Amino acid sequence: MNTLMPAIGFGIVTASILAVAGVGFTLQFGVTNILKFLIPIVAVAVLGGIGQPYGAMLGAVVIGLASELAAAVISPDYKDVVAFVILVIVLLARPQGILSEIATRKEVAA
Amino acid sequence: VSVAWQFYISTVLIYLGVDVIACWGLNLQFGVAGLVNFAFIVFQAAGAYTASVLTLGPAKPARLGGFQQYVGGANWPFPLPILMAGLVGGLLAAVVGGFAIRRLRSDYEAMVMLVVSLIATSVATNQVGLVNGPNGLALVPKPLATLVSLSPVGYQWLFVGITAAACIFVYWLVHVVTSSPLGRTLRAVRDNEQAAAALGKNVTGLRMLAFILGGVIAGISGAILVEFISAWSPGSWLYPETFVYFTAVIVGGSGNNLGVMVGALLVPVAFLEATRFLPQFGPPGLIDALQWIVVGVLALLFLWFWPRGVIPERRRRFPSSVRADAKRSLMLTRTGR
Image (cartoon, rainbow over all chains, first blue to last red; front, side, top):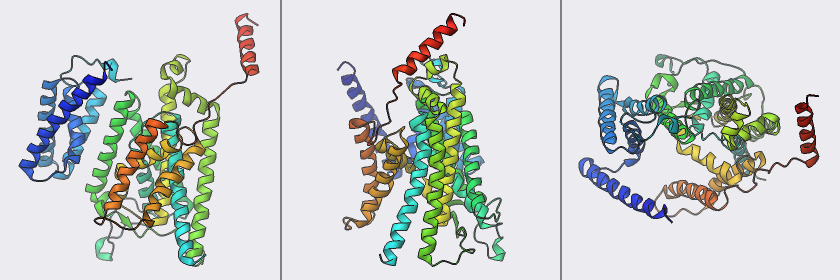
């Protein structure tokens, strides 16, 4: 019971934030194809460092810029691939994220 | 039995064989070695592409009437493309495993696998010269079709025989692995990695071995599937397909080869085939969309209420005499005899 209530609370807060993001996205682009964004969002969170709000912001900037620049330089088809490759590289090379102080390397890498 | 029913039954049997082979491969990785391979379908796809490219022959340029482009076309006789598909599946597993399972915790490993699956789909779709891009490969010649002169139904049953032979071979393979000391060590790694490492087992090597063997089996299953349906495109191996196999393994009983076979019979075959006979309702495509929901719900229900599956993994017991013998020999070595 001690962990259940905070978990539900966090779930509600997370869902609310995501709902705001979804409304913003739909207002801007007029379509709801959020499924394509699931993995890039995870990439952003991991890149910034899990549990790090500012890290997540930095991760969003890095992933967003990298994938859009890749679209310009390589080809728009490989936009997502670049985001995914960054995710894999970060997971392998710096699993604690670029800004993390909480998670230690040992926790993530076996 | 009418010809139409014979066609239907033989087709379902071939799909069943392919799914059973794939589930055995996934079971070796997920059920026995505990590797959460969310990229499983990629290895099946790699096998399928290999087999089709090796039977299609060299790619013709468009001015000679060629309508598909791919690399490394060849015209190999029947069993070789399937064997080569297994080899390619294993090689791909060695590459993916080489960076994914060497150093990551299992949940991060699962995430990397999922991402690998997405990257593979994206590359195969956009790199048109590789395997004909989003249109995929088509008109793959059927094995032995030019050598034997059979009626279409007769050929169907011949293919059922080929699939059954492949099933028997793969079952032999997974049975040898899971019932040997190697299988016992793999289960030990799955259940307690630290303890297995402390006993001097090469944990990473063992997991890699299971991963590569699973990749080989996945490649074989993809090859048989593509030789039968004679077409393959990125649309047939999107990442949700992996979760159908995961559901089959979980429902059947992960870690148990026979249970997994039952799971393959229940989830991808019986369950998805049964919907063919439902009366159409709602907008077109509704039943297909509901299938995914129901497969997901099925996996959740089984994980919640019945996590060991329909036929659970056998709990290993060691008779007391064996234990006593082991103890005695241990004491003898301790006392220096």
